[in-house]
Amino acid sequence: MPQTPIFSSMLGSSCSGQVQPDMGERCVDPVYQDGNLVSGSLEALIERLVPTMDYYPDRTYIFTFLLSSRVFIHPHELLAKVGQICIKQKQQLETGTEAEKLKSFAAKIIQLLKEWTETFPYDFQDEKSMKELKEIAHRITQCDEENGTVKKIISQMTQNLLMALSTRSQYQEIREKFRQPVTDKGTILKTKPQSTQKDILSVCCDPLVLAQQLTYIELERVSNIYPEDLMQIVSHMDSLDNHKCRGDVTKTYNLEAYDNWFNCLSMLVATEICRVVKKKQRTRMVEFFIDVARECFNIGNFNSMMAIISGMNLSPVARLKKTWSKVKTAKFDVLEHHMDPSSNFCNYRTALQGAAQRSQTANSNREKIVIPVFNLFIKDIYFLHKIHTNRLPNGQINFKKFWEISRQIHDFLTWKQVECPFEKDKKIQSYLLTAPIYSEEALFIASFESEGPENHMEKDSWKTLRTTLLNRA
Image (cartoon, rainbow, N blue to C red; front, top):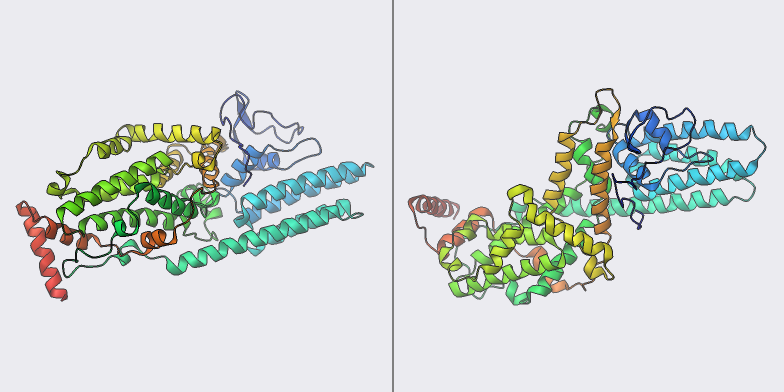
């Protein structure tokens, strides 16, 4: 993924795609509005992707089209069409006498393939796509057989692609092996835990340090989410051309794994609070996590912050009125204000925008960190997908929709590239990732043992839980 920004102003005056390529009669099809590409047939959009002697598509268009094209056409089919256009252009250039023009055209095609393989390596995971890539590469090398420069560049590009595919495959195998539902990590209590039991405070009592380690985990996990993973939200639902794109798409677990991390963190927070025996210590635990969430907010780690708040708002924790009566809740009230769901999380979005602006002008990685609330980010993409059709009534692709979706995805990809400025603490991270997490049932048991049921509904629930435990014993 290119490091430099390519979405400086997606639909503004400097929007990519505002300059129509001079390609004769090939692109009479696309529709422009205020200089911006808003729709076109698939064929015309593909033609716009392929360079000519006098034209090279800007990177914003390349990213947006390649990202959205999978909704309408399989990558190997797209490669085949690109290859066909290349053949026609190559044949036209060969009829002339200027060999330098042929080399210049070859260089542009290589650049396109290089951007494609670097940004979307998983498009080349199957044999069909690799075959099409090799065929295009073979044709292009014929344009410069004398010194072999083109051949060397293509060889290096192919090696980098294979390395990227291998790395991602290894990561997916690890995720597949250790991926477990959150409930599998739960432990059903049969006796009240001892007050001397190890807890998070015995591992890390500094809220800032814990927030930094949570941020380290977040950045590590988010680095393994790819643009095509996010595009599955669109391409796997109700695409008008789903018969073309669903058949042989390899399922990825990256989104699910990241979502599970959020759930595990929420449950860990609730577990740490509910299993504390003494009210004073439990109060301290609640205040500690409030401080951790606050430090996460200051860092720009909104996902961990939301997970912590969600954990403290779970019923087994929220019902501990005697504990909460001793908690200094002013800080917690501020955090909940930031995550207030009213007006489509307006307060959070304002804070996220501020963090994003800070990131753009930052001089250090510490100030560049932006980790959005992932499930809200996913919902935003889903919402854009649902309220806008993939195609317009005239049959053309609604490219304006995909401009906006790709802009949001590109922002996410930019944020995930930030190198974590915090050193890894293996002891703390080991605890965060492996500490036992109570199931919902176990949380309620621990909660009721800490503070007895207060009404008939809670008494009935407590009675049912105790009966269940006796039967299991």
